Length: 272
Image 1 (cartoon, rainbow, N blue to C red):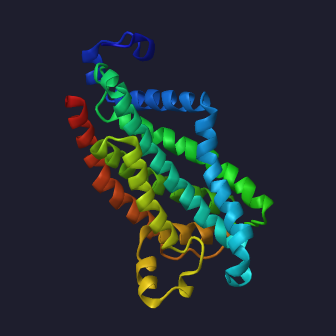
Image 2: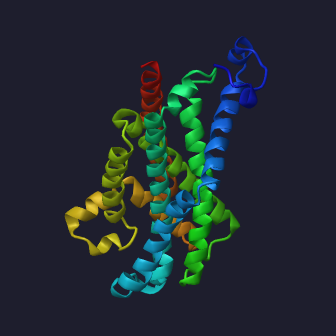
């Protein structure tokens, strides 16, 4: 069934012949998700409250007991919170797809002449937009609790680019999990099981040097540590070293594995 209100009066053959339509389809889906989010204050509050709670919890409860040298714990903490915020957004992307599957909305999309990847690409784009809003709010809270960044505008733009690249990659992980599990609660539990250990087994909240030797090997070679160290160096105006390229390499590898898997899984889901 064709939805003229969303897609206009263009014929199906003309849509299939145009390379621009998959992009337009994805943007239309992303707009729908963002509008629904704005109309759901509880959903917006839920996505922004968790990182704020972590900022306050670690800054005022644990911060005084953690030695990070002369950096100041608020400055050390915020990069980890930024990356954790992006990871939670990826969790929300997977949960949203699972909810769409359960509610029958995917069946509605199946009846429309849209690209197979547009639905999940639109979800990823909406997740990135929501992430930017949440990150801006977290930065504001960080400034209130003592975060004093020294990086210039170019450093901040690069840091944001790395965060969004990593968020883009993790969103595909969440969506692939949703299309395989197909249950919102199960997807949320699965992503929590992935995100929390990776966050705490990184340099997000404590320096890796304070950990046991065997654990330091794991911490130093997992993707969240590279993203956190790169973002921390950029916002504090310090040399980022190879962490920028390692972040991009990890992000590209994750997308290369999980994006095709998600598209294939979506094709199977809509074919049922």
